[in-house]
Length: 247
Image (tube, rainbow, N blue to C red; front, side, top):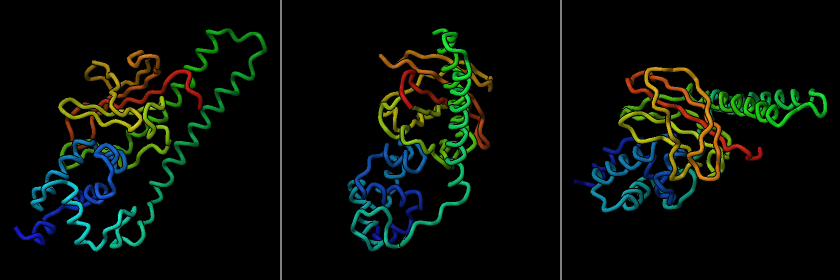
């Protein structure tokens, strides 16, 4: 197979993964950056290797880089001299989520401050903090509105949550999307861990619960099950934060 023929057969999705691989990113990092599972990234890299007859993903990435006229590992190849301007929805969604979270936190704090001194018991404080956590987690579950199922049947997010704590391993702020027969799609903060999902079926009710599945890191969890357009899978959207972690 001629090199040019193999390059012509690459899909834009495969090229995107190869460009990221050329920047020495792992499959997990690429998945977090472009909003798909790391299994989907590995599948695209494998198909690219086959089409190009490359011995490795790095070899395939270098072949694409040479063809597109760049050998450096910059954030964007020269054939894209400037990144496209983000659409208004991609820019405003993280801002709206941030504003909602700040309003919820401010409301919870104001409620506590209005209580007469000495009348707030430890249990009342915990209940107020739990309500605050639940309100924040409910706001984060708006990531459901950015989810869709791609051509491979895998769930992906059009917009990732903007809070950097979801990118920092073991930060205490986590999200996960799970579906039967599919690999878990997780925030980078979970790294090699997985959130436990409830075994309920057929219910789309939003639930909150405490979890002690991570040693020395008690969690407050919000979970909702949805069926996305184009899929019959029950997708479990889970967001969690560790109790006692500072904001």
